Image (cartoon, rainbow over all chains, first blue to last red; front, side):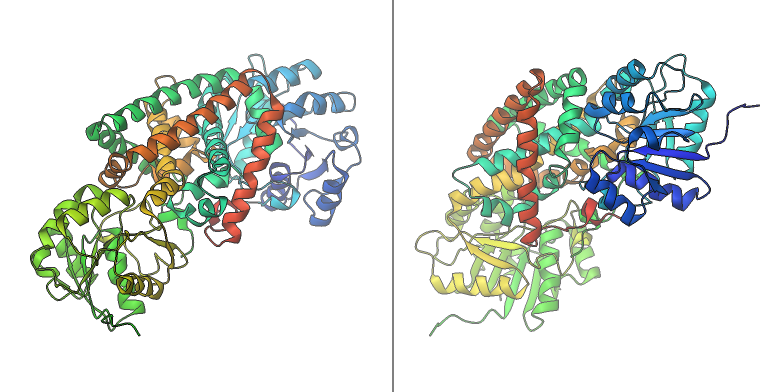
Length: 304
Length: 304
């Protein structure tokens, strides 16, 4: 039998898209859990109060966590060390500390340095939109999305189970993974896609022989799909690339090799190589739709 | 006063997503225009009859165009020369010939070679979805999308005007452009985005240290956006790359330079360079939404 205390109170540090959505999802799916929140930006705190993202908004991170059974740090991964430092003195001894960051090895190191206990369980709900800030959150963000927990060796098992149950209640599916493997998987399913989307949008906006107005008008040819993720939060993404450097550079190297091979096929009129790749890639799309990870309607269900 | 005959009859050669959508859009927006169609695949012809994509389905391209005031070739750009050859003998002398291909210099050459007249007006409606085939079409595909006409010097002005009016009636906005410039603009707004989407999906599916199941499960981190356009028709896209080679290689070179610069910034921990680019790219997304070329709702309006 587990001796774990039930999670009755959650503190959310950082009240942007992710933090706000967690607050709203708790209110919807687990309304008996009390929520307290804090954001370093006073304007965000005001907005969070106005929108009721959490039960109470504290004026410091230290205050927000005093009663917490679970603390979730929802700040850019470059700000994790600072946030962990801010809560270290007032954190209850029994509290579980987790986060939502997109790189997990760096977060584990940052939290371990500031909070030397066995109840730190880094996590990453693979969910989001291109929008950011306290007004972007919504209660159903995590439904049917995967939340990856990356507990280091020696982490308290009951804490891991309690966090897993928590995310399941918010509608997510939970998977445990080694932090290093997480960082490699997410480099390819999230970080490199963002990097190349940012790049092509930058390339297009810097051209001198094609105007910005032309790029915008004819974006329905495919380009507009890339602009969505290239509109994501700049601070968050800068931090991801700086904090998951080895995996990002490794996957970027593979992508560049493959792109160079395709460039060579085009230059040599090798239609067969192009056709073979373009046929193979359809299978992955089918898998994503079958697994419920994307809208199967054409054009993502965009309105026509 | 124009002496141009009114377009009373349209022949559509190729009854896939584009051809089928043109047939359905005519039925909805210009029901007094008769439509005839043909597809090289007998199964597609049967499906087109069943779905009523056009008023009558002919058993040869030559037969389909006999009564046409306007012929629109809706075949992959690598099949344009063959299609033009097939209709050359039965094409009425007054008929306008156009197409929907994504590369315009190659199409202009192919049509000019087979149909030596001044009533060939190559065109490109910048619209589509990742789906293909006769069942993928719908009447509103062209609404508020741009259709680019690239009439070569010496093309009959009345023919250009008539085609422009035709596309306007189907809901499109029309722009005239030089074919060479078209090919450059579309290389960046459509062809390179498709190429890099196909590449990253290929890279992800070839990894040995990340499973395909992991790629699919965690695709909501950004990757799934790329899989949509990497599910597009392989034949169509093979042909585009082979037929717009110089512009594609030129734009690919610029993209690769920019990506290498970003890779260097990551390697050197240059957060400022990353932040600057990631901030700048948001403006293009805003422009696309303001111009009505994408859904402004988060996540393209995907259902949550």
